[in-house]
Each structure stands twice: as C-alpha cells, then as structure tokens.
Image 1 (cartoon, helix red, strand yellow):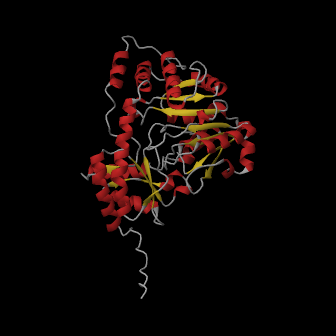
Image 2 (cartoon, helix red, strand yellow):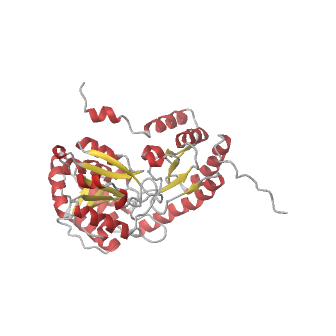
Image 3 (cartoon, rainbow, N blue to C red):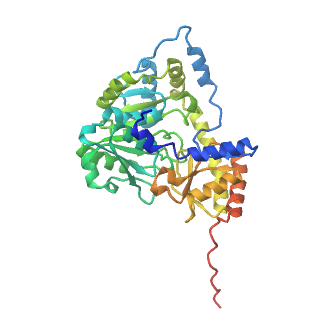
Length: 394
C-alpha cells in the first residue's frame, strides 16, 4: 500500500516505546506512577460536564466551523479578563477541537510549498510543531534555546528570518516550564513584522503558574500573531478536546476557510461545556493550587536524588537537569523502578541530559513516586558523584 513518505520517514512518536514498556510492566502487575503524558488525574469540575449534558440535543446536527457565537464571546471575555486585551469575537476567535490538531493543521493553511517556506520552533519543543511543518511541505528548523530555555529573536539566524513563514513560540513552555517575558515577546514580534513572519504562540498553559501570571503574545499585539489556547489542563478537559485560536483577523479568516474543508469543528455540546469553562476562573485557581502542591512535594526528592529542577516556573512540568547523566538511560532505569518519565531528548537535541515530569499523578502519588525516584536513581548507580573533599586548613 502506498503511504505519505512523511508518515513513513517520521515513524511513531518517540514516547511510544516508553509507553509500550510501561504497558508491559503493568500487565505483569507492576505498580507504576506515570509522569510521561500530560493528562492530569484530577476530576473535571462538576459544572462543566453538567453544561455538556444539558446541551446534548435530541436531534444531532453538524456544528459550524466558526463555532457558537456565545462561545466565541466567552473566549473574548476571558481574554479581556485575563490579559486586558479587547478581542472581536466575530473576526479574531476560532474554537478548535483541542490545541494539538489546531497547531498541527495551521501550516497546512498558511504554508506555500512552491515558495520553500520555513517553519521555526524552539529546541527543546513540542514535537507536533515539526510534524505539522513536515506534512505541510515546509522546511522545519528547531532552533536551540538560550541557557535559560528561552528562545529570543537574536537566537534565530538571519537566513531563517528571510525564508520563514511561521515562528512557533511556547510559553509557559512544554517541556521546560520556562516563561518568556513580555519584553522578549515584543522584540520577537518586532522582528517578525519586518520579515512578514506570522508568530504563532502556543499558550496552552497560560493559566497554570506560581507567582505572577505569564504574559501572552496578545498583550504585545493582535496583528500578525496567533495565540493557541486550551481547556485541557486549565479546566481538566483533556478528553473534551477543546481549545481556541485567537489573534490576527486575516489569519483567522484563512484558517476558517481551510477548516471548513477538514470537518474538524467541535461538537456543539462540547462547545457548551467550553463556554462554561471559559466563563469561570475560580476552578482554575483551585487547579493552580493542586499543581503547586505537586511541585512542592517533588522538588525535595529530586534534590535528594542529586539533580536539579531548572526553568520550571509555570505550566504542569518539571524540567530536571541530570548533571551529565544520559536521559534515555535514566528514563529506562526509573521505569524499572516504577516511575515513568519522558527523556528530554525526545523534545530536541537541547533536551539531552534532562527529564520531563508531567505533574499528572495525585499529590499523594507524587510523594510516593518521589521516594521511588530516589531509590531508582541510587540503585541504578545514577546519583552524581559527591564532590571531592578538600583538606581542611590547619
């Protein structure tokens, strides 16, 4: 059977092998605590499924690509509350079936194969940026981030700016949890504008933070930029597949025209649940407290294991520096000890020597996993050596 060469060349998602081994261990009766996939265990707030159930119609009909006007209005009101930015719900909001499909499909609408367009994203970064570029026929380039795991305008070579069609950003970052400040976002937008580059900012974790709220690209401008939002972690709705694209009206119009052909419109009963979620902020504040508690529980265990958490200021991930140890080897040894994590190298070459822990187990399981993590590191001989003792002065 013939197949798209992109499909055969890219193969399965790199994390698939880890999940296969984890499944095998579970089948053997092993107790595993899984930090590998960002799918939190906390229940979805009751009012959200209630809104869904109330909206299930007696007669099922196709949803429109543009989505319910009431949902677009709720998203624009959320953006105004959270960011202080006025958004036109008619021309600047596009509800989506989750953020991943929206991110993947964006280049299919906005890339010109004949022009040899380039798409750039940060390394380490979410693998779907590269997948979307490849299937759209663009040249994909992952640009290594700086030492603080932030991508800056001057980190990107000039030759790429000349051919770039789309620049992907992600803040708070997946996988690192690093937050890009407003000044850095503004400098990127300024340079992108000079080169007619569309800045697409993956902001799925915008409402999950400790301390000051992370800024959004929309606070710089709503022209020449798109923000990708999600209810998955913000509202515990991973299985609902509900998100939104917000920003430049011309880009939104192009995406609407494209998405009308793909049939990826979110069902209206899901949209009703999304409307309820975007309209409420209290449940999000409670979820922030839960993720903060998980961070507080895990950090001391990671330090006890001899490693450090770096860059993780927001989102739902801990980015662990392994101090020179091989991330794939550490992942394999921890898996045998009962802790499932993601090796940093699956997110790009800049991720080597790191682990990503998604804060998805319960707080209680995080504490139990911390002890298993320390035990696995020590038993696997992976603890970094103690520094040499210097003779005391006489």
